[in-house]
Image (tube, rainbow, N blue to C red; front, side, top):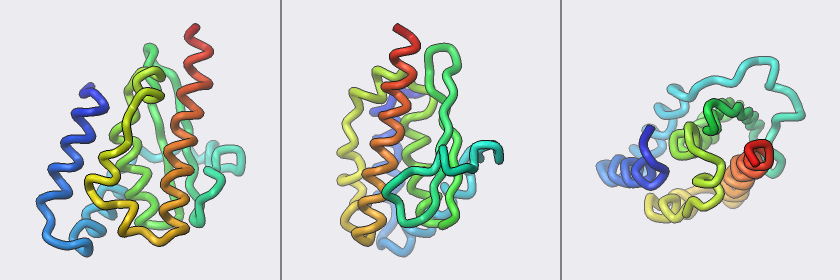
Length: 141
């Protein structure tokens, strides 16, 4: 699996191919459609990300010292956002997730093109993925 920084660079390059934000939103919707879906047993309040306007469920498993995330959302743009984050952070070691710089989000202009509530949700999603990394890191030590 590629590194976090390689996945981030790939996403920045992909977003740079689009001329305007309508095309980028459409691309995010497409990414959301390719999201590895969460098992229905995890679509409960225990797995909802707090701080998101939409419902976003995330689950993580540890496979060979790497976190593997699955998710879903009831909103198409939000599903695209979590798909981007999972593409970057899934199949990575907890330490790599915790040390990861998320400035690629600013590079693609995502935060500035989201409503304030969606931008808060984005921050909550990142925090939740990092919380999973902390939890699984303690299991590895």
